[in-house]
Image (cartoon, rainbow, N blue to C red):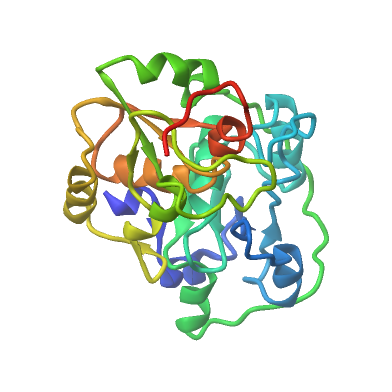
Length: 279
């Protein structure tokens, strides 16, 4: 199962110079932990890897961070990175698996089919003794990417409002327990504390160890221990739609297909004075 979603550093090193293979650094920093991931990419990246900024290849008209862009915006960005519909795309982050699943979900949502995550990220690459490079890179020759937008992959606040009262749907929140239980303030100014009514809490980092997902059996048990009924249709949420994708990919690894991501997540829900919350 994992081979359908991940490649190892050894595999990537062997195939790094393959024709029509593109490597992207998709790192983003957690809120409240400022880091210039573009600068970090400039300082050290896998040879030939370009920086794909999830905050720029996004709906820039939205006040919310890194919301899905239009198919046209995504297609233009993909083409500029030398990606067409047959390209093998390898994505990675700095090593903690914080943002790679969001990039995976985004690329899948627009129809990128040949897509894998570097297991363990940049840390695994460097830990295997493979060289890195620094500095800017010229963009490759542009290609044409034709998007196949999977609109159903994302849900909005109206869908979530309906889900709250639907016994066949559960909402699962990837934020820390303190934020979920309103014991810690939200790192975004003006955003309320608490959680969506009726939701369960599976903090994303309980599913990951050293930047690698735990086994499918362990993942299932973690969800069950949190009160999640894995036979139901699931909606995953988090602070801004970033770590919700970790839950979505973890569930996918267990074979669960009926799961969708709330793109606006708590940045939208908690930022509203009209949407219901629980402490």
